[in-house]
Image (cartoon, rainbow, N blue to C red):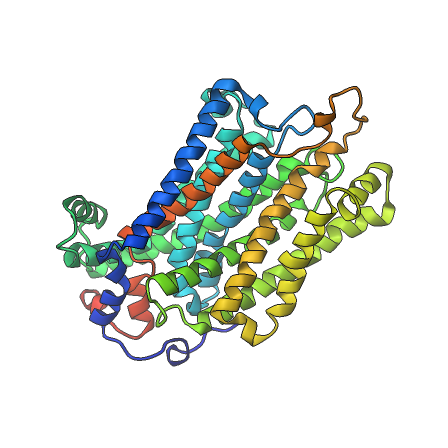
Length: 451
């Protein structure tokens, strides 16, 4: 996919002032529905917090996790959030390094999603712990041979880099807000003043900023690939059938790009509608993002075929039992639903240009993202019921896993938490980079001090 000319990618000729007003317009208005949405998310978070408090006091016995299903909804959510967080590196790093300038309006959307997702990934790990007060034992006393220790450090490193990569390109925009948002609340004006770091747009400031962004774009790539690779190793280094796989690293990374791309398409549609950004998030951007989604889906389909065809061909005892459960047994409805509706049908539909329009692509992306979450559940849970030794002499409810209301409430709270992070940041900062958008449109007023 080659980058188009400005005349192809952009519609209409706008002045810098028009672009500025278009992109900060929603920061000036706090509508009724925005307030309802924020309160709804807070209610979900409060309900989840109460449920987690009950779990913390009573113990993990209030969940459906037992000796055989020691990992459940929380770990599936953790893997999902880690997957979604990789979209920041895909849009802001990989596409930028490939000079795909069409992705410029999407970069901040991807970075916001990445920040919300990786924050909830870290929270999901703590939620899954029976004694979260001992979390510091991991960095202090953890064994370097343990993939859990690797995951702890790489998740936190990616969180820090994601914050920096979101913040650095935002500095010129924050300076614009500092000078324009004179009627904002006092705390908001103070925030802009502090975060703008005295930005005046001098030649030296632009030089340092561009160099810093370039460094962070390059730095985030190995960390991004390692975060989901290390997460896959939590499963792959186990000898349990269904997890012990040499392709889990690239398999997880490919699936992460699928989930992240779908999340960006959904966010694009919401922001385009709610913030009236049709001139900035155009049909062309949806077309290109959906082509990217098809590419990642095809790659993911390849790894899925490898993951199931090889053990299916040999059909060793435990592999056969596990695959039969997935293909024909109790887990078959979930397995085939995610394969067909979350991967195969989206690939076929998105080959048609009409399906790459905003509304059809939104519906397809919702199915893909839902399928991505179900896929993580299928990876985590069913495998645990095929141990090396047979399950016997245990209560009947030990032989299956159905999440309890506590787990559902806490998991919904993590979803609400990620959405609240994105919502609050969008309320304060423009979702489309103002200075980058102006530059791509050939408007250089903001760069005059650089000359």
